[in-house]
Amino acid sequence: MTSFFGLVIDLCGGAGATARAILDVIPARARVVSVDNAAAMQRVGRGTLTDHRLSWITAPAEQLADHVPVGNADAVVCNSAIWKTDTAAVFAAVAHILRPGGRFVFNIGGGFTGVRHPDEQSVRTGPSLNTLIRQIAVRNYGYTPPLTAPRPPRGSA
Image 1 (cartoon, rainbow, N blue to C red):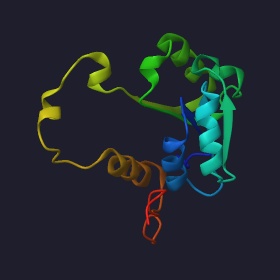
Image 2: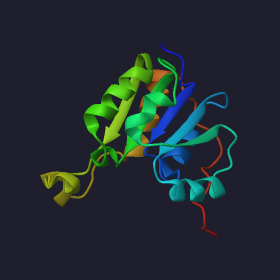
Image 3: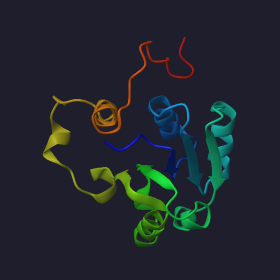
Image 4: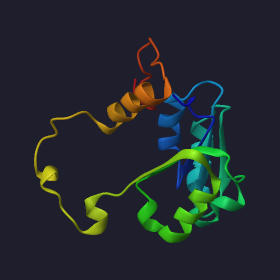
């Protein structure tokens, strides 16, 4: 079994919602780098996310390889913005920075591609994406979930 992540890139990370979710599941020694071209969104993230393991790079996704050393990233996560990029250039940059065996995870919604899947019309019967991510982290990477209750979302009482 491979050791869990040391460096995770949150690509097109915006204000840091995905970075926050990643920080909740990675070990204390791991780091997250959020890369986004929108400086204004990153300013919001910097003001709300103060975890010392998180750093920010303001740059287009296509220039990722200019900012992260070759073979240095254990994982790259792009949550809901890959469709806004030059995917061929981004995929090449990701391949350049991932370590051997590293993972690139991205998603696109059917709404962005004009496709409606029949599953979107029905009630979800399976686990959520967050549940699946945690299950994979436990099974494949030795992640141990915290024993305490998860922290409430920002802004809730």
